Length: 107
Length: 107
DNA sequence: TTGTGTTACGAGATACGTAACGATT
DNA sequence: AATCGTTACGTATCTCGTAACACAA
Image (tube, rainbow over all chains, first blue to last red; front, side, top):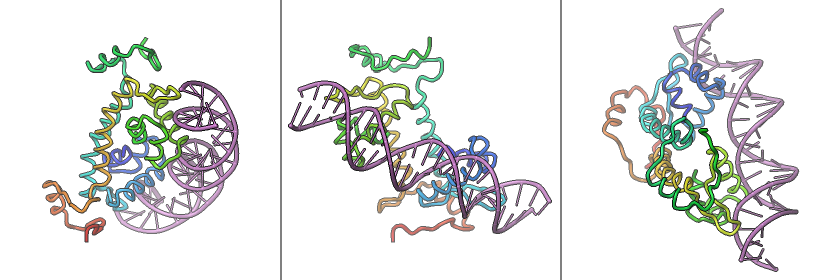
């Protein structure tokens, strides 16, 4: 899906591939595989232009927030700023038996 | 993440593996890989009990809606009911040049 | 001929299942 | 002894990058 969004942004497989640090054939295959999984076409390849299909545009609208949320999940404490939820502070304090892995990422 | 939710539901690797139609070692590796990617532990394995860590519980709260949304994206027209958005009706009608692939899934 | 997307193909990485292991009850 | 999670190991599958191809401007 990340690859799909990149291609949808660039509307150009070469530039999208460079942006993703992947070869153009690999990207082409990724998109085809996604289309096979979804059972509908995401792009119309005009062999000179790349355009979103209506279904591709719809998928794009839903894919962006999903990727954003997933990124938020995965790199939760990556930046230098720690963000905590009051409930987490609570749960963290209520079971101080043994911190499973205390990785001091922000010294 | 689907595997993680299964284990979190069952709190038992064997049952979760059966539910996912995968072997127990494979599931164990999947969870470990996810923990490695996230850089924090999701479960505490007591060699007799499995429990969520506070961070695992937090991850679970966020993972469920994300998976639900992803499933909605992937099997959009799977059931017998077709759901359309008014904007999609519009976009579909505004470019009737050529339907990229018209797969009549509901005869 | 140049630019762009797609196939072909061999190589490396990934993920699985079976089997063996360690720990706990 | 039984149960439950993990590690070892060989194998099948997947995915990549390079090279070759097809097609249009």
